[in-house]
Image (cartoon, rainbow, N blue to C red):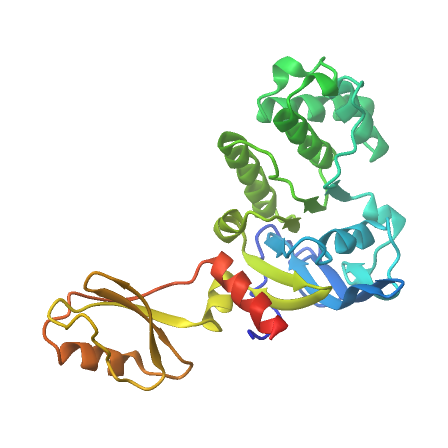
Length: 328
């Protein structure tokens, strides 16, 4: 099983350490810290000593199977649920009610008012978070324009398509200029164009110094967008780090194309196994610590080698490996 990477490189984009703004007691940029939280429902362990950090300017992907504990973690961060143990900190201190008001939250179960007009609703939510009426109205209209919904600002939410309702839900999390973004399955049900727009907004917010954490089952999207990824299963964080760091603990594989080799060619290298054959191309798995040059030498002994390529595992393959390793 892959070990947990304690901490990836903090993303310092948007930090203002020289002025002291955004500094925390850890001496770094603004950090949302989940510190050893646990939660039980009777005999069910929902979270088990879960710990990770999300830094300023960082997109953090939180992935796991259904029921792994992602939503419970987010609800505890928002104060909707209380942990049995542990604490969530912002700027080095436990989150207060006022601090939680500065978190932009997008729940998996969408919670806006279906019969309320879109712009009016966003402006109302902005005012609840401390904006003046004019500020809230301007921000609401700005985000509707950004999401291509300016012409629907006076429509009832329920009159919009599900995808457009999703865009409004994200605008609701953004309208007051939050210090932190916590998003539960924000890409669910979106078409590719809407995904690109939303991904661009999240990257923009991170580049402005906002810590962004979101859960998603779209692992290809998480791999493309996120600075770091946390893999959770049965309430435990099994692995955490950049995709590159997670790959470093995975299975090494090489494509080898040996046109002159016989059909049943075996390199005969201990710790090297054939995974797949495709014509003269063969995909081999290498045990940890095996030098791929031994495989290359064996291939060259058959004649010219047309291809010798390392295969980078996808996040989906890393995810399955981590989960399978934990189960074993």
